[in-house]
Structures are given as structure tokens and as C-alpha cells.
Amino acid sequence: MILILTDDSDPHADLVERKLRERGAELFRIDPKKFPSSAELSVAYSSTGKLRCALSMGTDQIDFSRVQSVWYRRPNACVADPAITDKLTRNYIEEECRFFTNDIWNMVECLWVPAPPPVIAKAALKASQLNRAASVGFELPPTLFTNSPKEFLDFYREHNGNIVSKLLSPALGKFTGATFNRYTHVVTKRDVAYWRSIRFCPVIFQAYVPKRIELRITVVGREVFAAEIHSQHSNHTRYDWRRYDQYETPHFPHDLPEDLRQRCVQLVESLGLCYGAIDMVLTPDDRYVFLEVNPNGQYLWIEELTGLPISDAICDVLISGTSAVKPHQRSRASV
Image 1 (cartoon, rainbow, N blue to C red):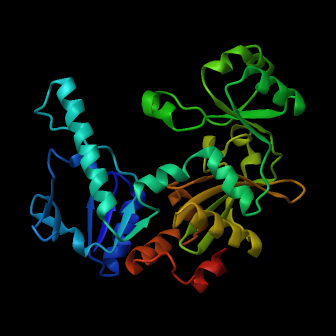
Image 2: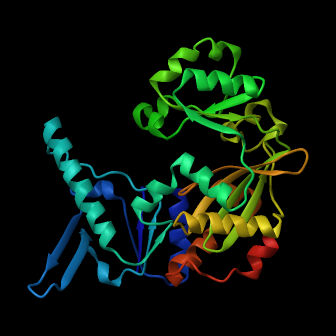
């Protein structure tokens, strides 16, 4: 049994679910936001410690003892029943449900893709990522995490003003929703005029890395799928490909050197993950520079534009129940 935890409108999960069913896999898909309003979750222990844990929604039920793998894709937080209208009561119920579901997820001993939630949260920490990436031999851009105005000015001058700024976490999107987002931003002289305000909140600053192309490297188990993003074809994507228009930004499979492939797998495994989406830059002088790894990053647009069989590799891992799936010849031929 495969358990998929994600939003109902997740096209990544839609594709993988279809492929899994075509292979005859038994699966159960649910978004935690349906608990407790339309889903029931029970845990029981006998006097001898025998455990029974079950999740049901309507006529469908899953016994957690039968779960061999979990895909923790993009689940939403638990949402209180609409019948509960008092805000304080709703907040209390949702916090209790979050605490309870996290307890359950911690109990499920099987393969988690990309990893159990606490491991995902730890792997997403930016400063720790760079430390791990350096330890496996990746080149990094000079980077400063700080809320010190003086440290910022020193860094700005050290790199002759050729630096960019980034956010430490996705918290801004959480609080603003779809109304506002902030990508990698070139630090301008106007920004420097507000240098004292840095003390109010930490920011990531990096020396700008010249780009020939950008790379999105998706690691699934021990398979590596590298894609080129030709972000320099457009001023819109020059500093951050996430601003891209897919019809104007060419994407192609990339032949990643074998030593870098191994480092990518090593990095993802060292973070406790069996899936990771790595962003790198290939410079005009052919240096590969690591930027970050997203432990639950999107990949479907890469698959659609390049033909890299990432969804098939995810199916392989989920069905096998182990991250140590032998790489397929088809995958190596594709990249």
C-alpha cells in the first residue's frame, strides 16, 4: 500500500497516481486538510502494546500496518470543520490536529519520499544546506546570512556591489498568499540606501554568479535527472528562472559529469532525503556552482519540456519501498 499526502489539485500527484494505478499498485491519496472535517484517524493500543492505526474517509480505509511507502508531496495543514465558527476554537482544533497527525506520521515506519516531515524541515534550512554542499565538494557562491548592517556593507563592498539578495524561507508567501512573491533580487544602490533596516530581519546575500545556463537537477533515489534552463535568453529570467515564460525559456536535458552526479546523490542522502531538486549554475567558464536544494521541489514542468522520466522514477521508488533503486538504463540515456 502506497499513501500519498498532497493537495487534491496537485498535477504532479495526478500523473504519478495514474502511472501507479497502471502498474497495478494499491494506493490511498488524501490531503490532511480533510482531517478532521471529513476524515477519521484512530490509534489504539492493547494492554500488551499491540498497535492499531487506521485512517478512513467515507467508505475508504487504510490500515497503516500495510503502508510500505509514503509520498509526502504537498499536503495542506489540517482544517477545522466549517461548523466550528469561533476563531479561537478553530485555531485550537487545528493545532491539536496538527500535533496528532505529526505524531502519526512519526509512527509510520516505512519509506518516505522525500523523507519524514521533520527531516524535510531540517533539510530545507539554507545555511545548513550550504554547509553540506561544501562538505561533498560543491563550489558555492560567496554567501552572507545576516541582520548586521555593517556586515552587509562590508560584503557589498567586497564584491564591488555585484550581489543579490534572497529570502531565508517561504514565510513571505505563507503570509501574503498569491498577492506577492519575491524572487532573487539584484541589490541596487537604492537598496543600499536602506542598509540600516537590515537589522530588523535577516537576509541572504550572495555574490552574483555569471550564468551560461542554469540547471535543475532532480534526484530520485539514486537516479539523477539534469535539465538545462537557458535563462539568459530573456531579461525576465536573467537573475531568477522562476520568473520564466516556458515558451520563451528553452529547456533541454543536460549531460552532467559523473562526479557531479555522484555528489548530487551524496548531498541528497546526507540530508536524509531520497528526493531533492537541486539548483545550480553553469558559468561561462564551465564551473558548476551550487545554489540550493529544495527537498520537495516541483519537477513536472521539467519532465514535460525535456522528456526526462522523473515521474516513472518516483513510481519505481514508491513501489519498491526503498530509495536504493538501481538506476535504469533509460534514465541514463535520457540525460
